[in-house]
Image 1 (tube, helix red, strand yellow):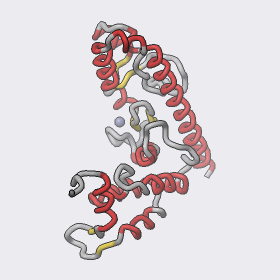
Image 2: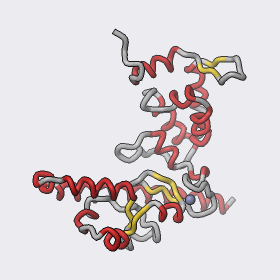
Image 3: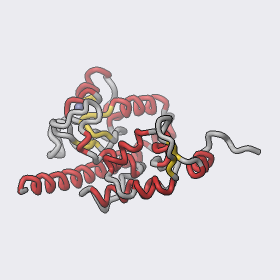
Image 4: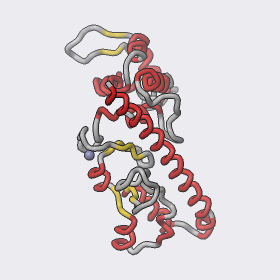
Length: 233
Ligand SMILES: [Zn+2]
């Protein structure tokens, strides 16, 4: 019996036995092991570029395909950046974590590097304020335009930190548009049994918000120390 052509195991095997080619113009092949040891000496920004070079590089650096890739990203972040000694938030892989923390790549939507950039951990994006406002609903827009129950808002973790005032905890809340759509769909379909679980769900949402706030605090501390250091030099 042949394994499914698309399974992860097949992808890993292919990655390990097929030499990497640089495409049609270069004739030299480099073995996977050598590629990976080169990667151990590169900062996350270079690894991100490597992952865009070709499909082979992309697969080898993808933790879902190559179980060793996570260590490459973790090592790179610890060795070359100040965002070290911390694991990604629950459910996020090392590659995404390192990508989000590469502030030198600018806003991931408009590529602007000058505006103040913030990692919003709940949707998992690094963005300027303008791009973020375009991709979220404010709680008042939500109430006025959709005439929906406030109960639904309790099921969605708001964007953390606050878009308008990142350093204060309160203020008008914003919600990522696809999270709102998912919560509305969930709420509409919920039967009585599910409704009994809503309190637990609200608690989970609050925990997610706190975790996100904690990551924001950590990120801005590191950035502030870097700015202070650059200023002194
Ligand atoms: Zn932007």
